[in-house]
Image (cartoon, rainbow, N blue to C red; front, side, top):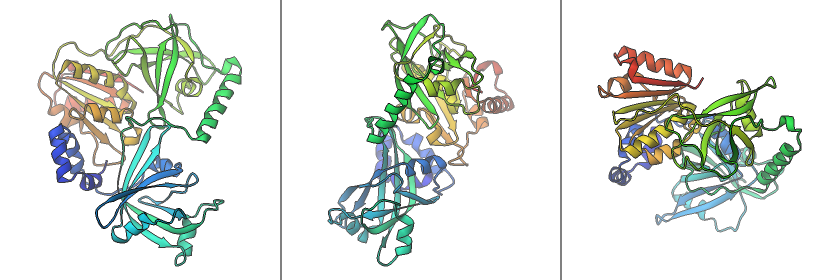
Length: 426
């Protein structure tokens, strides 16, 4: 979220409501970012180019808003540069409400939805209308090959702000092509030799995959229930389970994955798995072979990163997929009404699992950092450690480099190493 979004969206009235509802302090940090520049990341470009429809809002001269659905073949909304979009306007019912509104106000807001992934991107910008009969060269740049709908004009949008929205309450829906793809994959998985299916393992707890959710491009959440419907063994925040995997060399092993939530833990376990393309193949085998109905066997949860039992002030630092044990800790601390801060860092918001849930439920306690999207918004470990209360406890989880940097900064400000607990997600 760049400062440009806050400038447009956080009006004085919006700020009043944020203050009243307790989220103002968290969002205020966005306004202090040094840059207003808006640029699409690869993740946003890919998301935009995969859309076959979107919604666009304009405002008429009487201040009434109007929302129109725009549809076409996948890719009809084109990324023209790092901060411009364009598309052709196909002939419709000839009311021309959107085009008429743009004569007096060139501001628009776009909502791009992926119902199957429960993701949405909102974009604010200014539109330049290109009439076909005067600018045939520019129109040809926007046209879609092999799509024969009559083109009346083109729209080029200069983007002034964008932000990813919370997936909460988005009901998953699937297009015909998506359903066909899912069915084809299901048939493929169930007609392959048994040796290529998910390795079930030899643990004492028979489990079944009951739900799968795509959290980011390379991270999926898996919900596991007891295969016979029995109540599951309890666990404490920071716990993990070891699941059976097949490695690249064909051998079998187990990978440990943190249990990401304290909710409904006797009913189901939830883990999040990042697909490591250059890893040993374990996470890839999960992404490739696990589907709803897959059966595995595991041991009871274990815990080498257990949360303290008292109510000492707590500072938590998470890097990327290292959020997985941390999320359960935050839920536990919140339930205790304990004092804590969460500092969560990733390259971009689109690569941050559980961002929406954390920002909605724990916005007063959470600080987000997007090192690639906003280069000036990197986590300052020294400031985090030096501003902590003297008796605070620290939890650090993430890649090896993330943990080493945190420990080095803590040592610089004389934080007792015994007060810092770490878990490496290398």
